[in-house]
Length: 179
Image 1: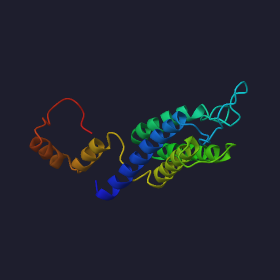
Image 2: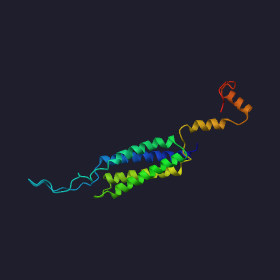
Image 3: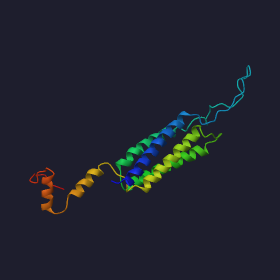
Image 4: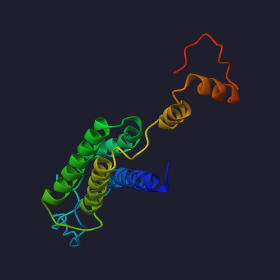
């Protein structure tokens, strides 16, 4: 396997791990930028806007999307062909959804708030999905090393294959069928 096939694999793995970390982090940080609140007036409480309320936290689905990013990392190795392209498309759609939710959420915007971190996670998720779709056939799958080694070893000539088996230490007179 060449270095050209390993490079997209590592890039996708880092993007998915980064997306999972960013999406999980976005659920732990306030989505509303900190504002200075006036000093409390006796008997009246504070008059400023605090970091609580409906728009203060990440949508509940972001924790599930962080887990989807981690599961996608494993799924990327487990499937191949059209299933890998479909997985990449699902990841790209999930990334676009996260970006849309981060931008469309009402309230003030801050780069280092939960919204900014979620937008970063969405962009990483989207990029990973697009790379999976692009390099779906070039990326290795689980067990592909063994399939390739077995396929390359057989020449089609039974006599040559028998001598190759002997060289590898296998008994060509065994009862189990050879593939």
